[in-house]
Length: 435
Image 1 (cartoon, helix red, strand yellow):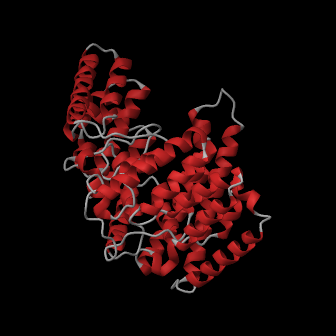
Image 2 (cartoon, helix red, strand yellow):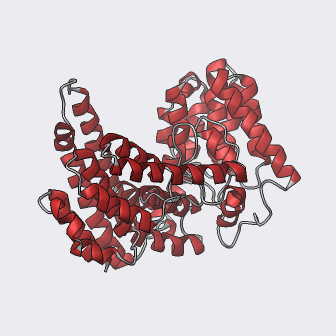
Image 3 (tube, helix red, strand yellow):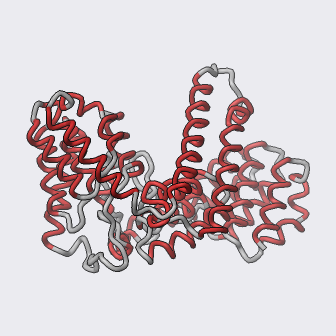
């Protein structure tokens, strides 16, 4: 089941030719939660994936297929998911119909079709070769419209290298035993960091010459790869630079709007702030959202295909927006944890203080910049490895946020104890970059 769910999620990233709402063609100004026909397909889609996650029944596939047919703009991945259920159950007619509908909606990657193991029972059917030929023809026709195919090949190479070093890292990690230290993991990760830096520099060079590589220049696949590079690279300033360019491309209809939403939400999560569009998902819930009551309106206005309730069920769980009371309670809890942190500092109960400040931070945005800065100065005074790690993490976040007092960090005597640490050089570098 977990493998199937990962396949579904990955389809949204790797499939080329996905239809998208653009500035000029989407008509999604009405709210998902109000429109009657929208309520129908949303409820049906959620029920379909609920059943899919339980037993992968034909009923689930029927519901997912029907719900997709009712979508104002189709998400073609759902047709492929339906076929993943139909084919192993011998429902060949429905399986081929589902794949045909995906092709009609813009799917054009025969490699993905051939790699989905659930479709293996279809391979001996004469219609399969015809289907592959049809997809290949669509891909060939589409490639003729790409303005810079050489640049596309370069981006594909960069991404292949990214995936190769990540796969090697995972393989190396499996060889570690229970005595492995954080340093062992860090050393194994160095090739990944080096590749990310190479890809960042390559993309910067591409941007300086061509601007953001969107669909017209490098096709949908190239555009996805370009977006994936800042997604992986840890430099928030680089991510932000790319985000502004992606926003412009989104407004022109030259990239999938999900690229902008996911990168913006990722930046929010990595700087401990609430996300705007609800695209950043945890194990069983989205990371905190800045305004849950209006998130679907924002998603619709941007041109995202589904409301958050459907997006969540794609990730294997159901989501109900929290009430105002629950939101207020979460904020108050964060403040209580912050006060406990201060009290434990006074009592010199360092482990408890570390735990409370970590809990307060995990509320994403309910602790303001001044509170974070005050906490960092208290933590910096402690001869405790975790305290100093949290302190340095806070300082990085404040700099990434471009907090107006960030330059003062380098002048504060409270941080003298940190100057001997390697990460202090990074703090100095980030402050300089932020000015």
